[in-house]
Length: 306
Length: 93
Image 1: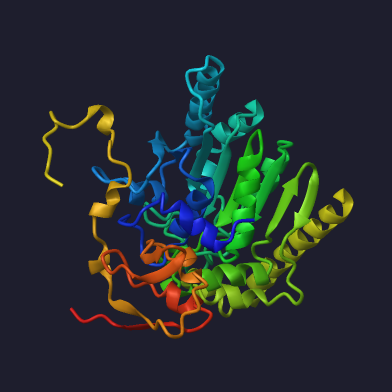
Image 2: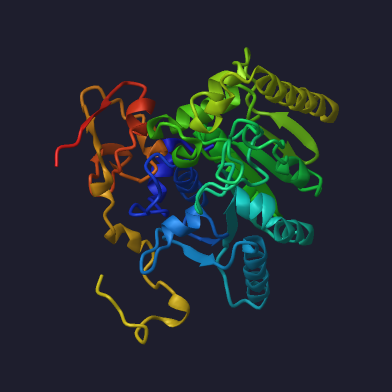
């Protein structure tokens, strides 16, 4: 496991000068990703906040080779590059070892890019797909996605007097990826940088596809204090909203088990997107019940596979 | 960076200079300013990990200061610093 000091030696391959909002969680994730991946990396991006803020012409925050194609096909684009690399390496035209990373937001991964991600994983390309999950289409003005949690206010699931925000539970993409029989799938948050670094290193060392789903606090879309971004990510884990676990070679492992989980309200009410739920006891109970069910399911899965 | 006409732009708008965003300063976004107290700092570099703007300057594995050309003043460093070595003050323009 690399220490912070070792990570600083890589230098910033995702540089300053990007136009992300103050307190953006996504850029913290990408900086950590690049500090671990190193210089010999090719990165492909789906359309989304982190693509838009980092590559406004004629500037780029990427100090590595970077490709942006379209919203739905970052996984397909990178799998093509990876195949070309393998062909050239076989012919001896490339000697270097190169890592391949595709990333996308929850819109570009959960919704629009799901088919290309599924295809790339099925074909078994040697790449890491990282999803920075901020739970809505933040870049275009906070529209709901299938990763938006139950009860959250977005501009396309607005909270009113009758309907209190999004009335559907979020999709569990991590489990969908596990269903692909991948060797490595993980869920993480930036608040635990060493856990996230470990997961990135494990995924990059693998000869095959890997997927990491990272919760990415978004002060703009979540209506939270920019300074509290990391603390909110921490609360998400402590309230069981975002279990931090990994699935490696058929075995589940929960990396952080809160000894005494905090109540979900502590996580909900530091964000304005849930403020309309303050007096909605029933809806909060519904969220609580769903999260507890999911958590117990996960505990059982860990027990069964170990 | 000087403005190019469409005839001078590289094919497919490829950017040939990696990391060129460093030329774009985001420091003027700031309304709060972090102040680093070197005496309290234990060089754990937690601020470096959590700075979204890579504004914590590090040399030879030691924090050397804050780069105000890029710091957007989000305040994450002040919240996360375990030794309270960074505090936020009002930015004076």
